[in-house]
Amino acid sequence: MPAEFRAFVAEQLAGRVERGVRRVAAADLPVGEVTVRVDWSSVNYKDALATQPDGRVARMNPLVPGIDLAGEVVASDDPAIAAGSAVLAHGYELGVARQGGFAEYNRLPAGWVVPLPEGLSAREAMTIGTAGFTAGLSIARLEARGLEPSLGPILVTGASGGVGRMAVAILLDRGYETWASTGKEAAHDDLQALGVSGILPRAEVIAESPRPLEAERWAAAVDCVGGATLPYLLRTLRYGGAVAASGNTGGAAFSTTVFPFILRGAALIGVDSAALPIAERRVMWERLATDLRPRGLGERVTEVTLEELPEALDGILAGRAHGRWIVRVAA
Ligand SMILES: NC(=O)c1ccc[n+]([C@@H]2O[C@H](COP(=O)([O-])OP(=O)(O)OC[C@H]3O[C@@H](n4cnc5c(N)ncnc54)[C@H](OP(=O)(O)O)[C@@H]3O)[C@@H](O)[C@H]2O)c1
Image: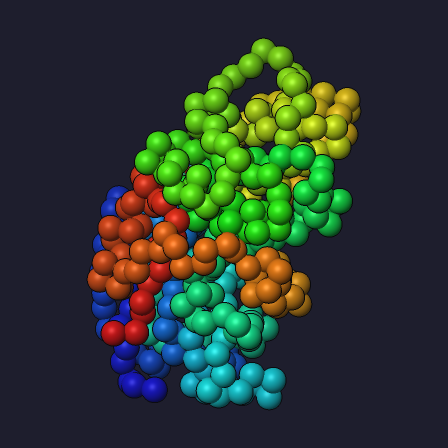
């Protein structure tokens, strides 16, 4: 590998963050068994927070963000991971407390590495990325609790964004009657073309209600918005339904009552992709290449270079995401 390579660096200075492409020395790569040439990464909401002065994500400074990556192994001290093999990684400390995916090379602990599943290119893997993984995991968690298409309609919130649109695409392919909630009118045509049965404006799912329970509507929900959305979802779940909650773009705090839980047997399932043990992570990626593969993978994908990252990072933070931004890391 070269002695130096290009990386997008975010440096916290007094009250501001300086962002841009710099040259980084290979000698400064962190310790690990597997050295990877990064071909693709993707832009996730957490990456944008990692480049904000008050984002509360970055745990090192300066930081190369990028919570996921895919590429080729150029050197390996682990007999199970051969040089030349295609791999991906995401979560753990990547792009938070350790150099992330927005760099041409990276070095990883072998226990973080996922072999690229057959049937997925590195580009497709990062089109799915952390967002699609989280969507797939949310659906797997709901199904492990007994969800199946015959139980009724599913609502996906934040449906135009990374996690949301991927969840819609996976649910539709699995035969669910899928509804979308979005704050973007401009996303309606796309969601309808994907196959949703109906669209709820964001205003409807964040509206406050004096009633602790409302008409039973949803068999389940995939929610990455949090905040004011969760009370709506909980009070409109059908008996025995569940919400898989993974995000907080709409806020962190929410207020609800115990009634959905004690009168309708509702469940709130937390979904975390970052610290998920590697064995389950590898199984999930095999599923994302097969039975959980999102419908229309490759649609609504915007490709950016390392130099073009600031626009994508600002866009995702401003709620402008529609589908996925992927990063072509190699020059
Ligand atoms: N738990 C985990 O392991 C995990 C993994 C990945 C992501 N996440 C979290 O999941 C959330 C979504 O991530 P993402 O990468 O999918 O982000 P994204 O692409 O920006 O999508 C988020 C969507 O949330 C909706 N939204 C609703 N209220 C909003 C508001 N007040 N401001 C901005 N957006 C709002 C928007 O969709 P509409 O306009 O369609 O409503 C937006 O497109 C984030 O909180 C992220 O940190 C968690």
